[in-house]
Length: 243
Image (cartoon, rainbow, N blue to C red; front, side):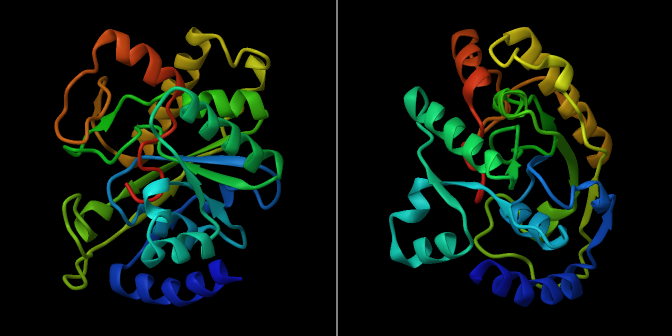
């Protein structure tokens, strides 16, 4: 209930303030499980996407840090977001398992395959957690391109910009069907191929230039090969809800 109350309050406010334009939202299925995979440019991305999706709730896996203080925990719990640890290894696998349960319940799951907000405006190499989920759950992936959200609230900003007639655009692509890879969610080559296909569609929708490097929180640097092999094949997102 709290989710719909917040959406009802924020929707007219944000639409009026930021002149939100939406394309292709009809590509989000009216029923059944699916993954919405988007580029990540702003803290507010996870507000704008649920705002425009019609009559369905979008669930994100939020960092456990946001549930440690009552000041933020009540909001995230009320909005139906799920607390997860993001420290790699077993905890990353736990995030995968929780996300799979969300999909098996027939819900929409929101994911940012880059793993964090873009530090430089480029679209970065996707982590293959999104592919693992799509193949393991047998669900379609809806690519989404966000445009202009970084102007509303840049990465290091504490508060959104409330004035200035800024424009926000969300573009949803056709559902991507990966059923041809059924049973291959452990095949690293398949996972990379699926992830790259998703990222290509996000790039096309967002209009961003692509960098074949994992995004860093502080700078655009490639991960070492040993780290890239593990985090790329497991990670969902370091900052799925409030990156």
